[in-house]
Length: 396
Image (cartoon, rainbow, N blue to C red):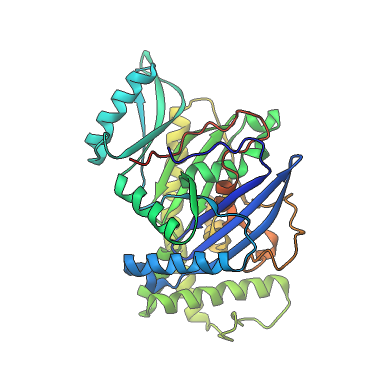
């Protein structure tokens, strides 16, 4: 099993979040319940690098080595997560209740649904709760599965970069762990909170209640779809669309803060004309509508499955959670409170600027660091013995 129990050790492993547009590393230290950031760094990945797996692998390794070479991270122990496009996730209901019966049922499911070999490939599950189906009460489970070659390749990449993998996690579990600390009060534990991580290619939706994950969904829509839609509407390349979208976001930020001339983009001094701005807004809105519909279906599934458990609020994370057009669509169409996450809120970040590189302050939100924070916190809990979300994988 690729896992260690860190128990009361205050120094956490490096949390490594390998995304499609960036590689983020963070390391935390826990002292007397206070969490301190001792090192953090981020390297961007150019969009063109994602078309060639070998080239992308080399870029990721180089980025990790570059961050490690700065000498700010302590040790080389790392917790990372499997890529969303390789991980299989599904919800299912079983009448079985004993562990061995559940195991046998899941083995059959892995073969039939995913075409994986349960004797060779990895699978694990989270018990989401009991649901009534007709006259029967069944167990609702969330099944995670991945082929062994993906795990082996991932570990080989980490080791080649000079890291020591002590656990392999999943984005849903890391995301939930990042915010579980904030759900300690009794009134919070009685609420259902939805955490939505919007990345470059995937959006991960995690429903949590009473300290437990109760539903997970991966939606294959992310920031790249915004860029693709803009590129198609304007007849330009993807990287040009990405640059224009940065300019549009910069315009909005400058307009909101009234601190500079309208239309000046980061370092490009690019100004958007009214027609281009409108085409981009319409393109982003169209994708936002599609993504919102998918998230709404998740809400519907949850409320039908777990009757009487109302969703109170939705917390958005990830690099695309800064997209105001998307947030406005979500606020109009989702019937819950919407907020952008602050995963590092309350953390001590006084170690010094030479130790911490968050790339930009994003007005202090830093919501794109949620997964990395959850990875570094794996194995630690304010309540002893509470780390039980089984998202590790065996190395066969």
